[in-house]
Image (cartoon, rainbow, N blue to C red):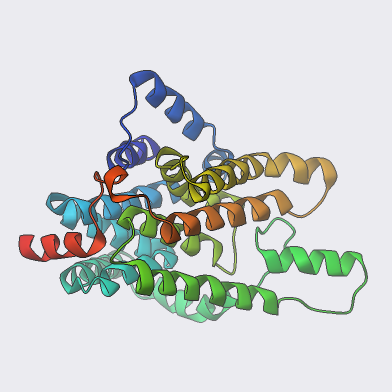
Length: 305
């Protein structure tokens, strides 16, 4: 249900209006997305968190849903922390009320959890939180550093490449901040936020295959809003389709060949590049009327509040 609601939001966020048969094909494609099924098989709730993030994006463009959207992001942050990077968008838009609403939602959920479960889970979290920033040498972790270390061990190289993970995370987050600084007033806000979602996903020090369900929203948005009349649009669409295909076949390749998750890593890097192209080369104003500019939208939100 959460995935179907997310799809509905994505369709409202794109300027393309699909025929019923196209909606059916799109839904079928989303439902067979492999990370979604792995998420279900291991009992994870990332699709529910994706719904909260999608509601947040929807609330930015539609002031009537601002409270629902901001508390949707607050729920995602409370459970997974990494969606906190998406709060940089209203920060750079100087939408302080949205920042306050989201943070108050996080605080409210924190206090509610304490009333039901006490302080013990939070003590445990604070104890293990430093480990969240460390790399883990598991074969099926979808991080570049772990894969490089696997090859180093296979080749008997006496080198530890765990530092690559910290460098990669830093570069991804700095690029996200740079994109906001230079493009927040002239790029499609949905494109910017989708770039943020990809950055949020791939910058984690520990990436499991089911985490890639967060990429479903950027994938669908990049496909539906592709500007195939421009070279950047064509490249972005090709990167998105190839990236999605590589992620889809990753588990089969791993199981058959006994190798690290190279298809997933190359796949999400391709989607990251596609999202970056969408931000750096925005669609002409005449083809992007369905989505308002970030600065005018921020002003509208502040006026509505």
